[in-house]
Image 1 (cartoon, rainbow, N blue to C red):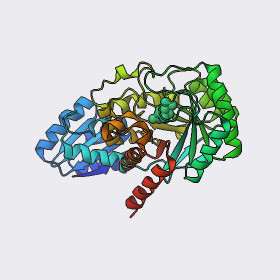
Image 2: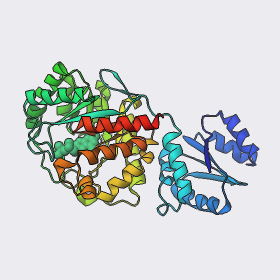
Image 3: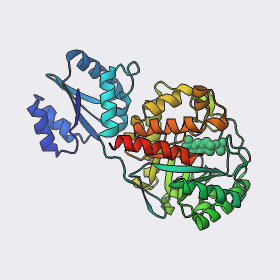
Image 4: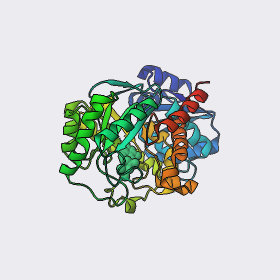
Length: 387
Ligand code: HH2
């Protein structure tokens, strides 16, 4: 079964292609003029598959037209992504959902760069984002980079190991964590950002939900805002990102770090997370943030059970299909402990494996503690993919 993109063709050419496949001309013209984000032809297709597809497409709000041995689907990337999931959920047979998923993830050009406040960061190779938590209580590295000198030393090691970005956070967002006040978060983060910008030379991001912290960090030379609330926590955050031209990571979470575990309920985690992220992305665009500044992140470990995290990596194409670079942050998280039986300090091999799996599903940025190990694993993945 093949998937062929029909979108992108001029409406007249698209209508002609559909008429050539037996669609009547009125329907063909309506479909071609519909301006769907994605129009895809699936063929050859037996009757049983066709029937299953028609039912699933109608439930998912995707236009579906069928003829002798073929079907055309037209809709938004997010809705089509909802059909690209394992059998069961939407009733789409696996051979079909797999082909559609591969088409959505691979058939499109992945973004080749990320616009930050200070540069266009190339994404033609995987970008490893080194985590620097300047918190006393982060779940895996709490306390270890608390002083600016220690953070600089760790960051230089990350640069040497191939990090492309540094991500500085002053608030632990582990499940159940309590939040420091803004003054305390500023006290932790700003001196470290200043020193990293001066002494390390890599793009610096600030991991915060507060616009006051982001504003000061950007003034100190940071160029990316990584907001685990997906710009929902602080109403001043989206306008700040828009006006500063900062790059932004819009992450998926439900509730707050204190309450999120109770909200880990999904019908189909990949489709639900993609739909919720698409809404947050649309709000970011409406606030004036440039499309090329936005990176999306499924938020592994945030309002997700073990099986949700694994399924999100496996079905990452539903998020990749939204058309932005995708970041994943599996580093040392509980779901990796559940799979391997390893304690938090022994999960770097598992982290590297999760990053490779995500890379194969289309992720482009990898937020990790152990930059060297993940970088090495990703280099092998690249070599295999490029062979
Ligand atoms: N995970 C954490 C924090 N920030 N940002 C993005 N974009 N994606 C993530 O998955 C992500 C994130 C949590 O991990 P960590 O920073 O290691 O721990 P803590 O929140 O306890 O400081």
